[in-house]
Image (cartoon, rainbow, N blue to C red; front, top):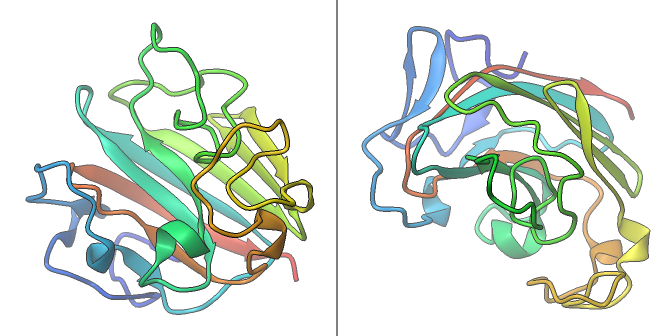
Length: 195
């Protein structure tokens, strides 16, 4: 268990905004919608190949967070880590590379599996260059990072934000929870190492 509802012993960079309430990890008092890299919550340990399971819940209207995996530098998570999006996914919104269930800016989710206003479960598997995302029991996204051979470009030719090719990203790093200026709740965070 990375988080069992009782303490944050497996984490570092614990700011006053991350609190435990009734066994749930909550980001509180953040409603400005601004991303603050210094407020992300990071694991103390780095992980390579693993299966990460967690549940999240967001407000039904405005929400934005993310689970960062294999982040090499917590001071620069956007350019050294990979984000699995956490937020809302209204049924009428088209799915894109920034949608819940996808791999942010890389792979759009195949389906909208998000349950608004409820607890949702992610299972994120990393093995070598391969990343697989399941949301509420449905496979929503897969990527083989070895296919990202150019900076700022996805294999299909569409642009992305990354200044170096994803094939060159670290295969081991920290797991983090994003503070993007809106409330979010996490629980039952567990990890199983595969390496």
